[in-house]
Amino acid sequence: MGRKPKDSSLASIPEAVLRAELARRQRGVATMQRKRTRLAKALAELDAQIRAAGVAIAGASGRVRPRNESSLSEAIRAVIKGKTMGVPEIAEAVLATGYQSGAANFRVIVNQTLLKNKSLFKKVGRGKYTAA
View 1 (tube, rainbow, N blue to C red):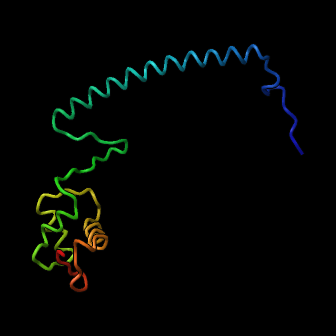
View 2: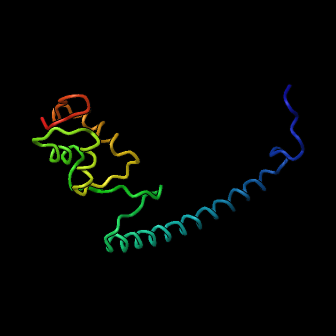
């Protein structure tokens, strides 16, 4: 039950016309590539100026991931060394040290880090941890 091609199908267009259209589009692509190169160079210059001002550049999503001096596991270890603390207290203490996070629920991230790094952290009781 195939459909019959209409008179407006590509088969009805002369080959010379199709080739001319392809050539026209190719010329347009070259122009767009040159424009893209100019814009990319201008964007790189703007990025350099923003970085020189001491500001992080946002990615394609518009989010800027915070940069910290130490990893989260190192920050947690420094906070709980010699103490026994619960996950909410650990999360608050880590943030109080200046650790930055873009997580919507930082406590969950802290809990995952504690569970993942069993060699660094020892579970003392339900929800209570200390440095190993």
